[in-house]
Length: 432
Image (cartoon, rainbow, N blue to C red; front, side, top):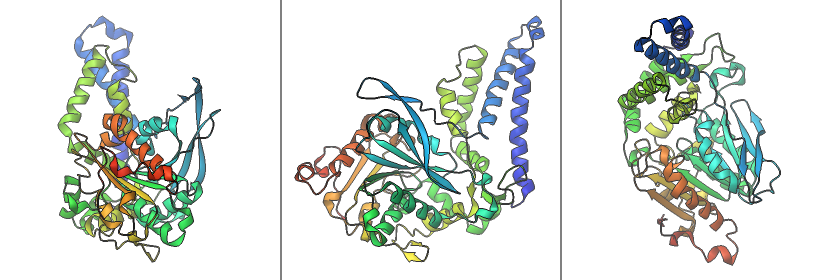
């Protein structure tokens, strides 16, 4: 599988399906087709419309689409996106709300690098932006990064987070969503030992695999079923000549997308069949629920081979974070060194990616952190997506996270001590 031809074949198949969809849509749209009022022609046109859009989305990085937000003054304020720290494999970007006084809360959202772009957290950003200064990690598509830039594995990822936290400063409140949760925890421990003044104020871990063995899912079982040799031979490909990263070994986004879709193939098939029917009847819209979801879901990016393989081997197979045996650039990471950063975990009761128990395991590793700075929340009825971008996030989890940040904004003051986090009705205090 590790050949340019294999990578180019996948891109050729994607491009061909996009072309077929565009052709069917164009043919059905010819005025002459009106002479043959056959519903089948309308269905062909609708199939082409949905197919072209779907396969075209796979090769495009989505736009953030956050143009303005309302503020306390009753006015809408324009939002601009600025890169404040640029690196070859990812940038730290900030959402600037023009004309609004700076907010006291500074939040760093650590987006997952698991096949989708950081825009997967668009709704998360939009929900937090009215109440905080928002920064987010914007990871780059590996196929667009020249081989000359070198490798990028989970140790490099962790060091990127360290640099991003230092850039924002000790007032940062870090929220890590899914895949980066264990590495955000490691980056915080790295700072706790080597640069305590740069530690974030709070760390919120949402649905992350701190201890994948705490509650098995199809994702963790997959890591157990295959050997690293099998994974390298079947999943890793070399970027073709079409892209700047020609020759780089990657785990292709298209291959990851196939895995995503296969997990709920019947549900996705039904969704596309229904969308084709709606388009043929003229009931679909450019920004309807189907397109809003799949424009983001289908937009995928490649990961470097070393990042993907080291994640599977060191996080899922060897459990280095769960065993507190993670090493970064030759430096052993001791999570017990975290003594002042308040840490909260959030899990969804129906999460089939990072099942309940995997994320909350972080609190047991924080042996140097007092119980008053530990908190957890289990959201009833919530799946994986819902705990950071769905209804559960909007209605329940977001307010809890903001309250947690505020409660630990100035831990040295009596005011913060009067409102201990563990007394909240929806937050459970855990013992280390």
